Image (cartoon, rainbow, N blue to C red; front, side, top):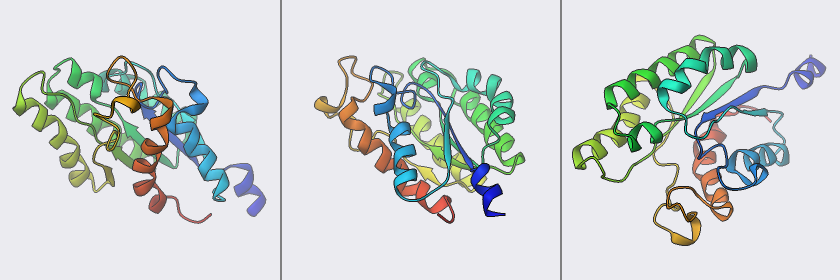
Amino acid sequence: MCAIAAANPPTILVYGDSLSAAYGIPREHGWVALMQQRLIEQGYSHRVANASVSGETTGGGLARFSATLDETRPALVILELGPNDGLRGLPIADMKRNLAAMITAAQGKNAKVLLIGMRIPPNYGMAYTRDFAEMYRQLAEEYKLPLVPFLLDGVAGQRDLIQDDGLHPTAAAQKKLLENVWEKLEGMLGKR
């Protein structure tokens, strides 16, 4: 039984955008790669599959989600999408519907879901900005999910931790992103 478990380690699927795809830095320095290292160091057998795509929207993510679930068969999904929708001013109701569809698809395959929340600058007004951040809390509550309220907590606004584009975290920021995720993830992992 133990040999079978070792041969088929549980998969954690990270499904996100450029923030999880290590945009602008070597992929091995991104928070997702650091998470795989930490899992190994702490004795977890989990394998990380990073299906994050720079520029991905919730609509694009939903379009390829079913095939990705079938391909990776994850025990746990870290869902980090929405910032690109928000930066384009796309309707929050559409984002919420797309994220909800991915959550229910993952749960339908018996995968746990960790939802990663984001915030956006007030380019489209304070109401849109507020409703965007609130959408993640509403989804977490409705589907009873653990929520990382803001992936860039402790990083956003720190000029030395953000790349010259003003949006993407530097390599130096990735450990903080991992800490933000790990705080919620660790309790979902089960036995080492």
